Image (cartoon, rainbow, N blue to C red):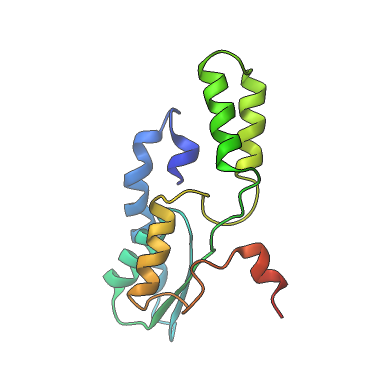
Length: 146
């Protein structure tokens, strides 16, 4: 569950409990005693901690996390701020605001601000749990790498 998607919506209070659901689901999936190791794929701010908690609850499998990397911003932070300010002043329509938001968050990867998801990626790599050197490689550029 992504906080950014659920903010202001019914069910937004379930964001933190969703981490526990992810952790328990991960532990249950790993408990089948048929794996030699685990590869975790996740990027959002509740998913990565949930996967890590689940792997730790199960406890005895070598586990590595592969990050999604940060998405490329479709428009500059200045442009985003301008539209948001104009909307707050009543000078931009809701359609303009939504169009700006869709251009801002338009590709694979973590949100384009220094929030929890990007912090998670950094900390997981520093702790040696991520594929080394992969936390801040954009997913689109990663696909183009030889």
